[in-house]
Image 1: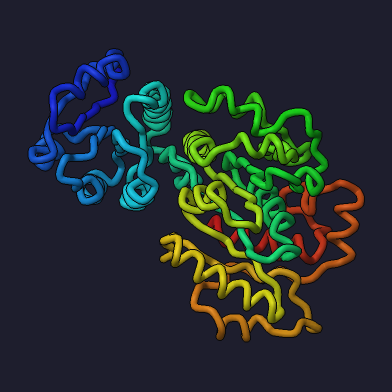
Image 2: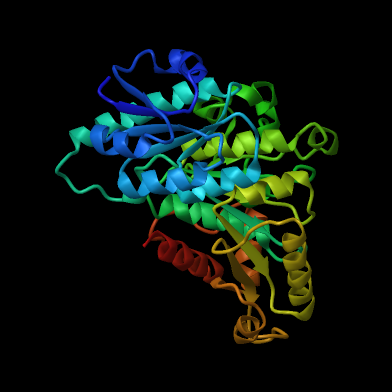
Length: 383
């Protein structure tokens, strides 16, 4: 294969460990974290496998490599599970985070997909590629969360995912992490014969094929959905490690991963929030919503969930009769307002009663008011 790979590791034992994953690639070079700056200029690799240096400078090296190789792909390797490190290296520019030696099979799978992607890009060389954000191979994870029940979080998560799928060429996956009661299946009229719990037996080798064998597909958009088991006993068997592996495997296979989270905070919710590129906090225009938002802010701080640049508020059920206005909310909170969705009792309730999504076609003309607001929000996100 023509893919040029540079492995950055500070000890020899890594070569032997990585050998099975790299055996099919002709252009593989090894260097150390001290020498990487020279090798980057000399080799100009397509892919950099960076093992966390002993001095802990991995994040800084990812940033340097990203600046030097803006089109390169960085895969970060580490021997310890560390959610904070994962978040930091992904923000710095790494497209993947592999735990060694447990996830080396995932490394082989990822390298194969990168090589295939590069081959496709070479064939299209010289032509304009629409949707360039979808080319890098690292999907975006958007989580929908609210500390207040009844805010319309699940409705917005499903509506957003559906519109995103219809209005773009992106591969979109919707994950329902409301493990005890679900909810997504109601808005999209999906059967409940397979759920994300079916992935538990393959947790340690989970890949795109496993996920696609379990997903349900919405009939109009073909949006892929991982449904909740809707069972308290099954929910007890799902760990934070499973949630982390599920989101990371999904990120590798889809352009956008939309996660609908429950209102209660536990290890699973925390893990999903930490894995997210963006958190959409859904709230209504009333005093209880503002008070609960304040409590959630404090909880995020206590849990050390860094929301800088990745928390936005979505105001749902906006109408003239609301206790507060959107302008009031903007004056009370410091984070950006991503969207304002109008109250649409008739349109939303009719869709739910019929078991139909709010939007069924791209550029649909006769959309309900709430669906129009969601579509406008999605299109703004895509531009």
